Image (cartoon, rainbow, N blue to C red; front, side):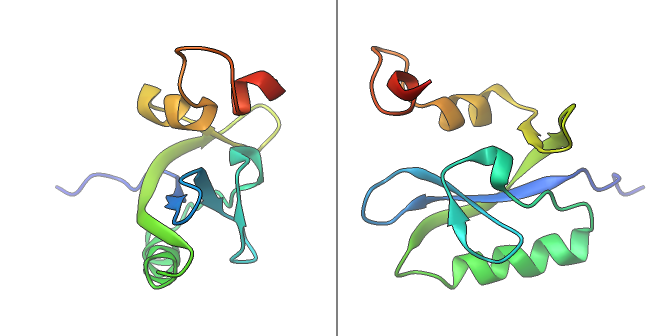
Length: 100
């Protein structure tokens, strides 16, 4: 029996800057997970992933990451790997951590 589809977001790394980026509902990219499109339909998620993988001038390593709708309805990570990618390295405060 096939597993039920769980919500996802499309994520990748920015080709030139290396930052973690997320695809929005308009097909643009954002560095803020809360602005990402939460995909609840498997067919739509596959289409969005294909579109992301074709943007080779902008992204590298696009994939679907599990997510849930947070209390505010915005995407939130379900796995520690995605939480780590969202917040950045933890060896000292810089980048995203310095901004928080």
